[in-house]
Every structure is written in structure tokens, then in C-alpha cells.
Image 1: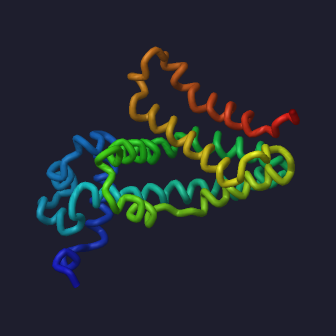
Image 2 (image 1 turned 120 degrees about the horizontal axis):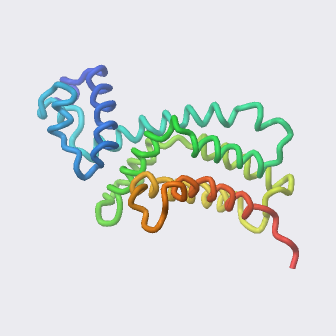
Length: 218
């Protein structure tokens, strides 16, 4: 057993993760300091480093917590009987996107993900990034959305000139990218009023869902 593991307790680790998530959202990854986190938790910096090697290591751990929480909430949404009430696949997807990405309960989670993505970008992407993030991500949400897209392709409500994988990836990454940009910049989006900013994500959902309609034969 490593020296770092000897001094760890699950209770303290949970306190660190909760405080770190709040700090990352408030300050962003760039300005969040491990010293400030140690003070917030009530431990020394040396003790903090017994749990996490550095700020990146801590960020990956918080990401896992956030993904699990989002996964749990999306699971409730994706198993809602409304989605099995005779709606076509495209309308099921509309409900998922509106209820999921416009959910105020998930705003803090999406805000953390936006800060995480902003930090791990460009030259700051470490070589082990994909393997580290991949261990945090649950694929059941993505696969369930894929099932809805497949349902829409089969019932004729979603276009068939793209693969299921291409469509679900396009939809989810488009939603995540725009929402993250809004959460990071919001009042600083040039040329947009607050009302226009508030309509960006709902409008994107409308455009995406309409764009999934089967194409007319040439």
C-alpha cells in the first residue's frame, strides 16, 4: 500500500470533492488554488496532496462524480413512461434534449463540465487525457440516446442518410458545446441580449430536431 493511501479516509475524500467542485465552478480551473481548497476543507496542503497528486488529478476525480450524477438524472428521464407512449423516435429525442439540457438542476454539473473542457484544451491536453476521462464516463446515457435515434431511423421519423452513430454524436456534442460556451461566457456573448442568450439552447434543439427529419427525395 502506498504512503498516499495510508492517510486517506473516505469521509475526507468526499469533502474534498464537494469543495473542489464548488471552487472550480466559482473560480474556474485556472484560478482555483489547491491552497484555497485545503483551507475550505480544513486540512493542510500536504494532507490534500495525499489524496490527489495535483489539480488535474483532482479535476478528473470531480468529473467522475459529476458524470455519475448526470447519468443518474438522465436515467430517470430516459426511463420515463412518456417516452414509451407511442411517440416517434424524433419526438422522444426532442423530450430528452429539452428536459435534460434545459434542466436547472443540472446547471452546476454542466458548469463544471464547461470549466473542465476549457482547462483541458489545446496544449493543456495531457497525453493520457482520453484514458483518464474514459474511466469516468458512463456510456449508458449515450447508448440510450443512440437507441432513440435508432428507433427514429426505423420508424421513419429520422433521416437515414447518416449513420446512427454520426447523428447521436452530432446532436450530443452540438448541445454540449453550445451550452458550455454559454455557461462560460453568458453576459459576455457579443451582440446578444440576455433574452437572446436564453433562447440559444432552445433554438438549437428546434433546429437539430427539424434537421433530423427525413430528407425529401431529389
